[in-house]
Image (cartoon, rainbow, N blue to C red):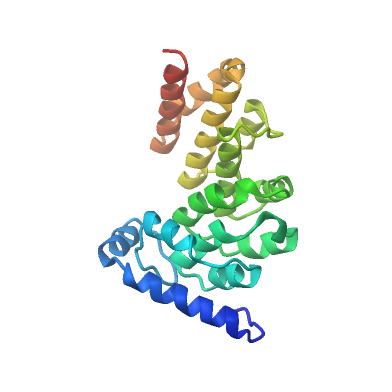
Amino acid sequence: MKFYIENQRVEKELDWVLAQLKLYMNGATTAQMEDRGIRYRQNYGVGMPHLKQLLKKIPYSYELAERLWFLEIRETMLLATLLVENEDMALERCVEWADKVNNKDLVERSAMFLWQRLNNIDDLIKDWLIGTSQELKACAFYTLGHRLKLDHAISYSIKDLVELISEDNALVLQAASFALRMQMRKNPDQISLLSNFIQRQQSSDRLIDQAMAQEILTEIDYLNP
């Protein structure tokens, strides 16, 4: 648990955010997420449209963004990813924040809202891909995919991405599939390099491998109507 020096302004802002979130609590959404194995320390079930409207009313400071993140409440963590500014996320802070990424929902949304827009993301991705956390490996692939989707250059070719796929974890494979598909859109001339990989995934006995192959084939059909 992190401890903070008392700051009445930040405490007041934090209390206001929590009060606003409670107005939009949705127990049915929370239950549905828990049924899918998505668990936070606390989850109010507030939808993204409400969170984005609330974001417009929150005054920015890194202190508030950090407090929101480390509350480990789904909604405050998502607000923090949208609120925090790139220049405030030094590498040490990124590492500390990333340690709290522990479920599929947060993997996908933090990659989309936060990690893909950071200047030092290359260093993080390199560490995540060789680390032991499956959530952060998935974060790395999703982040690469989102950067490609936004037309940013990445230092990983299709061949590089395929060579990095060595996990049995479904979340990692889903994220890797997303990164490959976005790379195919940006560099369609590299699609032919996937032939052996697709055949290997198709011939696997595992449904997650077969599903990945089908996603890639569907993307190829989309790119070559």
